[in-house]
Amino acid sequence: MNETVKSATRVLDLLELFTTVTEPLGVSEVGKRLEIPKSSAQALLLTLLGRGYLVRHGEGYTLPAELRGGWIGGSRSRLLALAAPVMKRMAEESGESAFVGVMTGGGKVRYVAKEVSSKEVRYDASLAHLRPAYCTSIGLVILAHTPDAQVARCLKADLLVPVTSRTETNPEKIRQLLSKARSDGYVEVRDANVEGASGVSAPIFGSQGEILAGLNLGAPSSRYEQARKDLIRIVCREAGAITNSLRSHAGQPSAA
Image: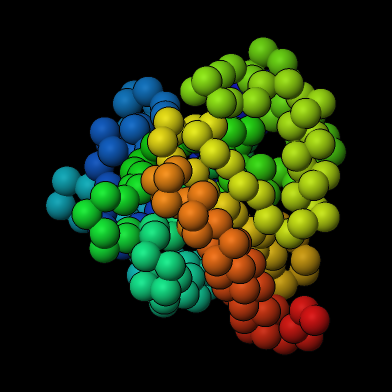
């Protein structure tokens, strides 16, 4: 990726980040969430501030009111509004933690919303940390519905490094997982990104049928194995419900 394209990607990642948060973000937090140097984060923030795409709020930055829910991240804003009550319902029904994640321009997964289990022993994950797509169920379920050229960029051999002892790093085996995900409608991952944590994700599609996000239920691995059939059922049902709501909002017929 050349520097011009990289800069454009970072601008879009930054704008999309601000559509997913309600609180102001400072330079250090933006740098951490996007995994870029603090100097680069500051330059991006000041550029967008100067063009009116961000406003200062104390020591941080936020989208101006007129851009919230507008063309910047419009479908993502609707997604998050729809997902919040759904994730709460999922967490209550399953007893496990629910997450929504999206793919960044750099080919990594960002969790943009969560509803954490009320159980004392539970799976939780930071919204600030970017994760490799190839070893997370959200990443795999998004890649399963992503154009081949983008998938090929994400599955370059030098990028596929083991995160745990269970991480699959063989590109052909990962492609088999993607094919199975398209057939099954979901992806399961066990201990591949975090030792002792497993989860299942289903795809959320936008109004034009494009892959928009992944919906996940994550749990300690021992509990996941006991409840996996129920967790799969809940995730697939609710991802389909969110997809149908997004289509209805856009005036499209709901999926069968």
